[in-house]
Image (cartoon, rainbow, N blue to C red; front, side):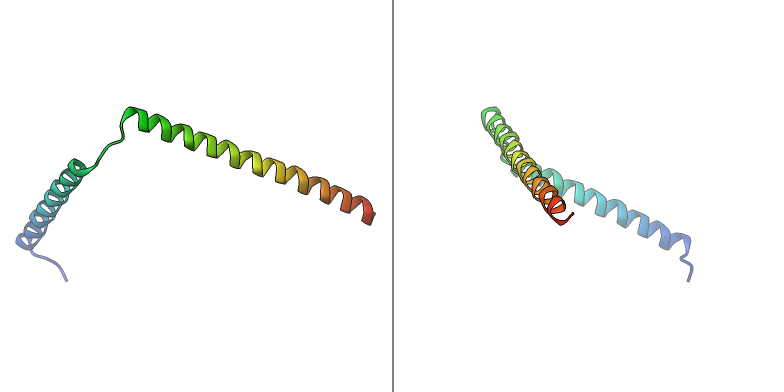
Length: 78
């Protein structure tokens, strides 16, 4: 089912209006955002880095422990 030229133009205009409304909504929502202060941003960044290092250390220790256990298990089995 083919659309006529006028129907295509109507759909194109509707998409433009919908896009415009969407962008207006985005702009309105961005004005409502409470952005962190510089101090808060630094604190959050430090917390993320510390948490990442802690998780990395836990994974590294777990990997080492399991590697040793499997090495001992392989040696015991033969």
